[in-house]
Length: 123
Length: 178
Image 1 (tube, chains in turn brown, blue):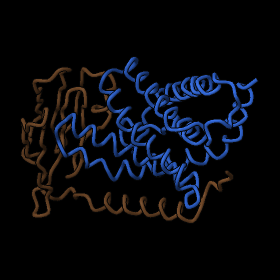
Image 2 (cartoon, each protein chain N blue to C red):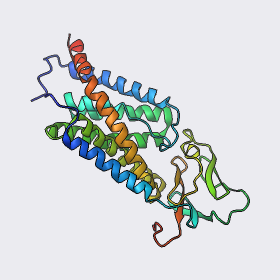
Image 3 (cartoon, chains in turn blue, cyan):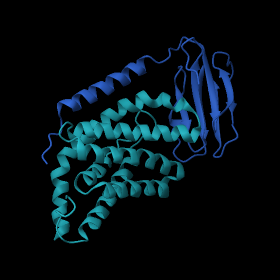
Image 4 (tube, rainbow over the protein chains, first blue to last red):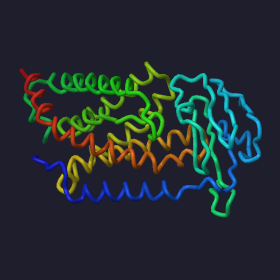
């Protein structure tokens, strides 16, 4: 019945998973490669935006309920506002690096940045 | 075997289960008041109510742990809507099952901290799969490394607290039996 809270196997699990996670985080895309923002609504890609070509601020309002407003400027893309309750998508902040992502679950909308290099994520 | 050691009163298990449900919901509610923390995945919560689920899985059994998980998810549905319910139950069920399996069969090898970390990772994985289904985009798996790192940290915290409060939670059983 008595159980020590920390055993040897626990330490291996904690350190192993943390190391693996950090490795993946550092292996993510750099700012230097060409960045394409992909907007997906309900599993269909609705927009592809080359973030380096965006000169003036553009806003995108996909046909979703609740309504979300996505804005792109200065090589960044972000959820400007959302009609949903938790606003997690807006709190995700501005995306600028390949591998960055913001999701609005109620609106089934995903904004992500894919690099265009040879090691870019394909899907 | 474990089922009949908690006294003869048939009301004991449902009563304790109800108290634990209330505690789990209360913890979830207080967690929802925590403001957004920078550099962490948005919407990420410490998951401290897993302490209660782990206690139920440890000293009552799988059905009670599942009832508590369901109660938490229904609370999320009532206060934050359907999406929150799906996210709560997808992570909750997986982490509840993991907690019960590990506490029942792996306590010789794993301590509470390791078990709590695995539960936390299962919770995040369940939610990631649910968000993948809801959005229909595999892109959500980009979150995985961040969630894994955050899950390890919160898992350790939850495990430490669980080990610390276990005697107090056990005492609660005695109060109810009287």
